[in-house]
Image (cartoon, rainbow, N blue to C red; front, side):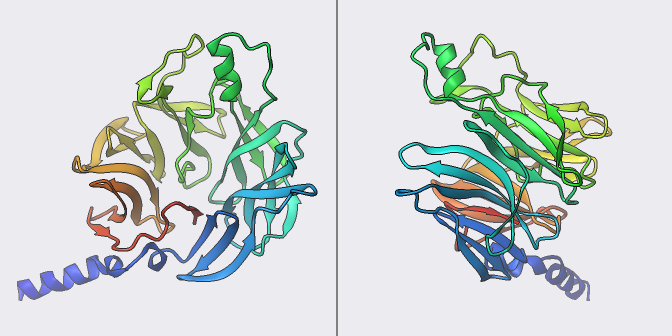
Length: 328
């Protein structure tokens, strides 16, 4: 009798792990694949549209960084304005409908000003985004520090309030963050939308850490409180961090997943991987029950699903999201 009860428990506990791909676990996914955007609902393509127009003879546009807004009936994206032989000369934050039609410009940038990464909160109230200014190369650059400052344009953190379309906060506490140092996970916002986490990594080239004269920023993940308009916590040596619950953050350190408690200020090993696995990216599924993991296992790309409560793993036999940008 006890064996029967235990068997039934296993069946109910691992019901989610009977899925064959991530499309069986997430209701709606937006995918950017080369010049095409696809909206996948319950494993089937429900809409598709071009995101890279031809600009050989005229001005064109390129849509990228596409994400769902909280209601999932609109899309948030970066629209780049392109000119033949000059490439993208500026970009703006825009809202699209589910067919890719422009509904609204949220920013109006001038030439040489660009939008980087974009992160809407889960409540549809705020958008965290990076921006930067990059000018054509100058003949006056004479030293390696100046060259690096131009090649790796410094990113500013901005917070847009969707109610009045005003940038409420310009997070300029780190004025010298280059593009290759500032990292966000796919889940940077806390569930209440009042805090976010971002990571600053070491400057490195070909695996070697470089030290520049302006490099005075601590390496790790920073927790920022929007309502208080200040940094409230720091996770040392974190490579990337994402929000798990209201007061808990998951982060990667030394190729393992750790958990940080903002109340108790405690770090605990959350899940340990063998040396044969190299973590590439982790993100929470929309229901908050699983971690979707993209990794390299014995030299081959692999997708896994890790149940947050039971720590049970499902390895998908067929990878569906390799080499594409996707959001849910």
